[in-house]
Length: 310
Image (cartoon, rainbow, N blue to C red; front, side):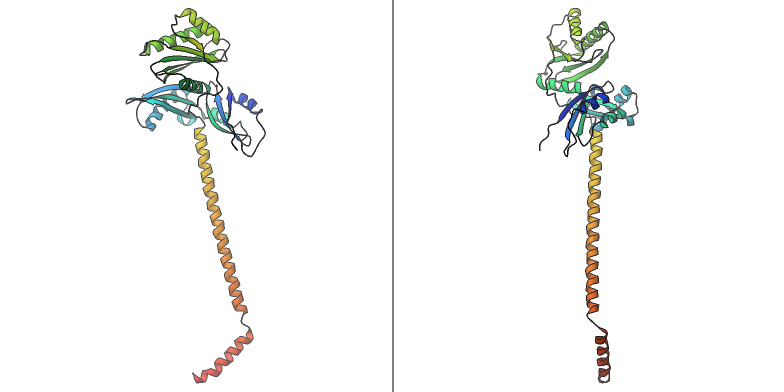
């Protein structure tokens, strides 16, 4: 029977646990679950590194993650997706977090109720949905999303590439407006297009509409400023912080299956050998029981009588 994948959004493990209480009771086939995070401990960014083998690309990204999270390599979980490449450079996005953070989320679900198959970032999914819906070739767009009242994220899409992702925390509207204006100026200065084709905003922060009004008043924006529609189905960005854990689980399952199969073969061989020994012992017993002491004595007398004629 086909089971629909559940998608939940959470800012913390406690919120995730609270939402799981509304899911059904344990069943024989737990439903797959995708978790979209809005946790500030999850770091997401765009990357642009020299083209080369995947090991070299991952190394460059991992070194940046070490700097951003201030953690040793062994304490970081990282995954990335290459969105485009040319002869010299590779472009994409990556997601990273500490192992303890991912372990907090992974330990929440009851495996008899749901099966956690993916942990990713909600903003990345919104970006992927926008890339799939909007024609980004030879265009430059800015997306602004406010997860909470005093924090927002800015992303820039140019030529279908995510060239910038920036997280901004602010105390008042003036600080937020200055950060947004500086980012837009940086984008226009760096872009070969030198202008924006559209600014899209959205989110749950109550000050997001006010921030857009402040932007319109302080900057002569010559492009559309529109609200980002909240569609039910977000894009499926192939970045999963649970990938390493799932790979380890599959390895463990394969080893367990191989061990179980080997054990079953040993049991079968042992059973076959035991049955063969039992048959042999039965045959020996029946053979020895076919001759009595009388038969032995009679054979000995016949031999004694035939001895002189030999």
